[in-house]
Length: 280
Image 1 (tube, rainbow, N blue to C red):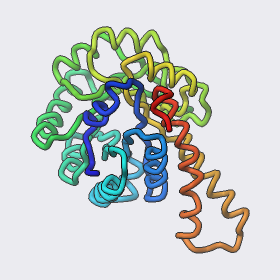
Image 2 (image 1 turned 90 degrees about the horizontal axis):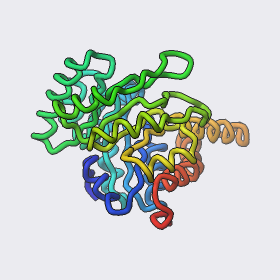
Image 3 (image 1 turned 120 degrees about the vertical axis):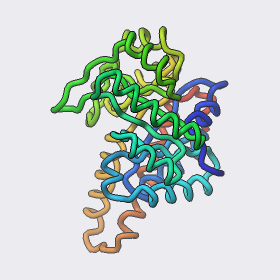
């Protein structure tokens, strides 16, 4: 089926509840594995091209790859730009064919973040593309610390820049290799009390799976970004393949063998965010 917007993906599960995973893509094999997993679960999938991915592969190539995967898929697929640091990056993604973009002005003063987000919104609305904004600082393990999103600023932000999804900082942290970074439920509740917008938690790999499910089913968090735990699965599968078959040298044979184990790892992550009856 054709690519869908983030709004359309949210609408797909609106009557059932739960949340969706925004999975970080680095290449064809992992993207294909994620789509296979989503088809097994029977849920929409958000394929995300982050800064690392974009540094390796041009945006038009990623857009074409995501579109090809969507056209072959039996579930809705979103082509999402993750962490666009300038409005221009978002505009380039829209032009390339992405159906959802995230403008990340979280490091800027509130007024500048709003101004830039509104610029992206104007272009996105014309093109029929969804927009995710970010407020608060989601830090990185071993580096920048997280700074929680202010509910008052979130209310002002949404009034001035009514994005389709708002990424917030509630104890979540990027690049955690263990699920030992619980989210702060009090911050989530305080923000959803004043903001009607679907919320997003980046750094989802660090949030314990049990709490991810609780948040997905009981709050307005509609999207969890999942990257590190799936990248770990890719690395582990790659090492196992090379160790078990040290003579293998063909790229297709090596990377093709990783699709199934990555899909198997992805299935429970996606299913965990949805009501049980939605899992196949």
